[in-house]
Amino acid sequence: MTSPGALGTLQCVVLDCPDVMELAEFYQALLGGEINRPDPQWAVGDAWATLHGASGAPVLAFQGVADHRPPVWGSPEQQFHLDVRVQDLDAAHEAVLALGAWRLDSGAGDRAWRIYADPAGHPFCLVRH
Image (tube, rainbow, N blue to C red; front, side, top):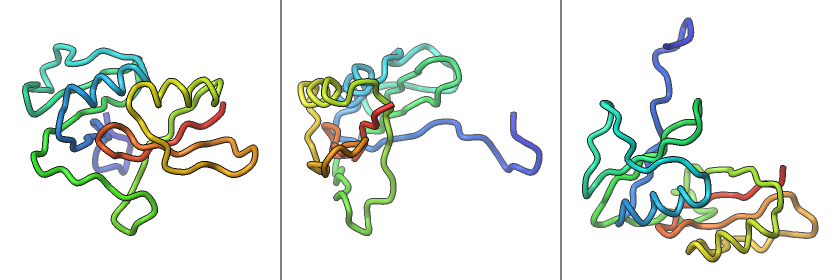
């Protein structure tokens, strides 16, 4: 349902990537949820996967792109990133590295966030709750 005066509602966030299942499994391990849950809105396959999170959370979708070029953090072409709230920043840091992410920014001092790239190179931040 759209809000009064709105043209539409956000259906999902789509991340282009070379391997849809690899990225879906990465975000499932990070955020929880169900990969490719039966849903009449989505036709999943080799080039498309979905991750349904908790009720009310936006769907993350993954679209296979053969010539995917990951964004470069801090460049004018890098237009957005995802923020993920965590309880323990140090524990989450170790977990995302083990899942295949890499750190983009070493952080300064006792900053409440750290910047990473997922296995396809999309930037995301872990933010201390």
